[in-house]
Length: 254
Image 1 (spheres, rainbow, N blue to C red):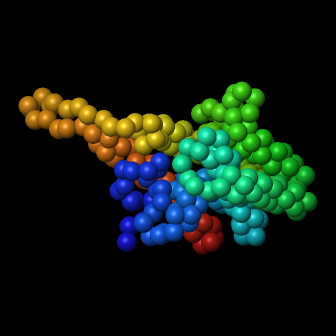
Image 2 (cartoon, helix red, strand yellow; image 1 turned 60 degrees about the vertical axis):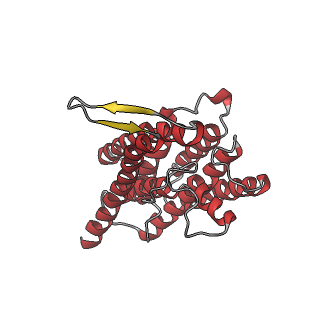
Image 3 (cartoon, rainbow, N blue to C red; image 1 turned 180 degrees about the horizontal axis):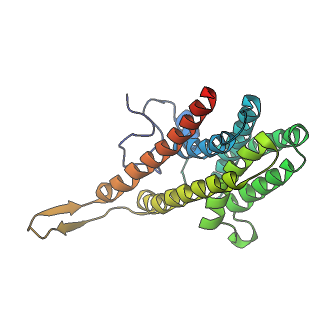
């Protein structure tokens, strides 16, 4: 059975949208809404940050992962679908609102608890994360924060720094270096996913021909352009997850 990260399907709003193994349309819509490959990729940044140094507090890591899953995987993605229905799901608006409130609210609640458990300064990360989630996905303030920079910082650098701070109550050079790694990965994801979204969601068909120097030719269609973009996106997500798993295993062996 094909992995949801590797389904070669060029129809739908995303390469992971509505997997065939989920027959019920509503379940498939919710799966699509969660953006599983990207959500796992961003959660891997939390793990990377948490496992960089010192003793790993498993409970703090799990709570941080849960907070980011609720805030990004559920809340932010529900807000994004509310703003224009880019995934074209059939999820009722009230359910999207409920998911956004529960997701963001649950993340805030966990952040408040963490502020007492770790450090009051953890609240800064919570506030920044919530502001980014709301402003970016709802395109508040005229969409000024709905841009690539906000995305790579909020979905890349912030999870690493939060994961590290939740473990140690402080930051160091190592944490910022890892955050730069996550920012670069997120920037690469953005560069690949933007044209892929354009092709899937706004392009009806593509036609053309590649003519090589040796005289051979190849017809270009929508699938031809999408394939290398989405293979790279899958590989990028798996690479980030692999780094996170490797660090967890290395930390467990200490």
